[in-house]
Image 1 (spheres, one colour):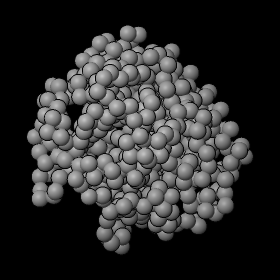
Image 2 (cartoon, one colour):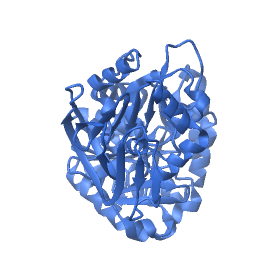
Image 3 (cartoon, helix red, strand yellow):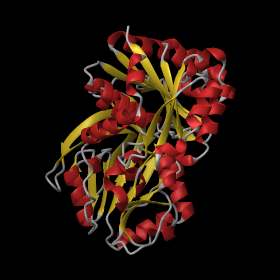
Length: 469
């Protein structure tokens, strides 16, 4: 049976996914068979496995770091928020309507056996399982319904490392307070603290790590610097952080609508600093291209576009010849209408923006698959994945550049292919249509994982951590 190491955090967005990806690559480089695991993700950033099942993007990246084929056992439960108090439950890669209908606290008895089975099967197949927690284990109101933090750590008898984002401030209080909220059997699993995203001279931290160990008996096993090496993000915190629009002397930018239920936003990372998330018409000043991203609630997000005035502003830019690209839900919004006769999203019949002569109807069955096709406009072979209920049909005046996947009407394009801009040739073409330069090239994902792993390993007391495995 394999061993387990687990990264938990004092808060959401403490860098757990990032650190887990680094550990997966470090251990894989040592010749070990490694699998990532997160019992439950709450994220609309989902991807598709080779066998056409949904799982969180974070675990897809971590599987890449571990050099193994993604498997839904690595993320058995995926919660996809549809509203502030409602989430779709995806169990082992498939949406489960019955579990979705259950109240939050009644789900645990149904979900925990699947988590246990998935976890133990990975522990039996791999040398090491790198486990990611969610939020914080200090959320004592959730202890009885926990299926992702200390309950998983106990089930796997994992060595737990607790990470704090020191860039936020208050890291030592976060670490001590989290330790204090744990019960004795949970504290027994906590082996070390990590100070993550540190900027500056680590020598200035003394004597705080020693003081913290005196209070808790737990050593600080790493001070990881701020690494400006991007990985696909798990949740919307990164979008919030990049939503502030600044008006400067740059030649222009790509505006991405900050939809309330935006999904799969991580696919726009290759745009780099040329991208800006926008929420008002004023934010579009200077935009050279516009993207409508995917949505977990297409009808309500379309209503938000109209209520903010963005819908009208985007339509005016399109009429001026500015390139507009819609991806998945964004594609559907660009059409003439969206109909939902069977209540898949509960949006009924909604008129679209009318920038593409397309009509979409939601079907109960969801399409989830990895996809490769040739774009008739550019001749490029494009790779990505599909996750959608919509079935879209074209009317006159629209070019179908790939059957059922990519359409163009003048300077407006729409696609069901998530990750289209992760194809370097298409990214360059899209920015060319906008008259914008290609960002200083992102290294390949594998090169970024290698760089992150090297720097994280150098920042940890690796010999001590390795001894626990």
